[in-house]
Amino acid sequence: MVLSLAPTPGGRTGRSSCAACAAVAEAAAPHLRAGHVYIDLNSVSPDTKRDVAAIVTDAGARFVEAAVMANVPRLGHGVPMLLCGDAVADVIETLVPLGMAL
Image 1: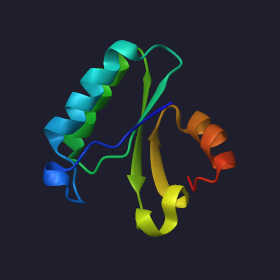
Image 2 (image 1 turned 60 degrees about the vertical axis):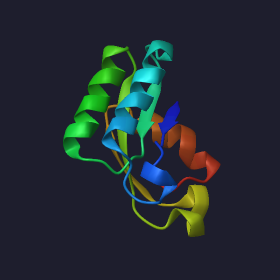
Image 3 (image 1 turned 60 degrees about the horizontal axis):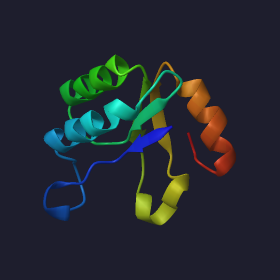
Image 4 (image 1 turned 90 degrees about the vertical axis):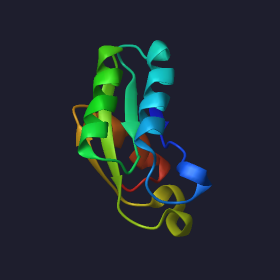
């Protein structure tokens, strides 16, 4: 599983850059294979999510969108996330035992 959280412009907290999210997916794509799951945690537009999903699935991996639902610094890896995608069951099975709130 690959978790993508692209940098924000200027290192600020908040929404990730659309270009950065696509660039991260493009950089990961040559290393993705069938059986891999790419989990995108970035706050970007639906169009950007679709673009990233296409890059990932064209490489043979499955794509899961993760919407972070609370303050990460306070909750750490236990922050609640809403998931969407065809590999959600696999993500839950793998990450919930590690303390993630999915």
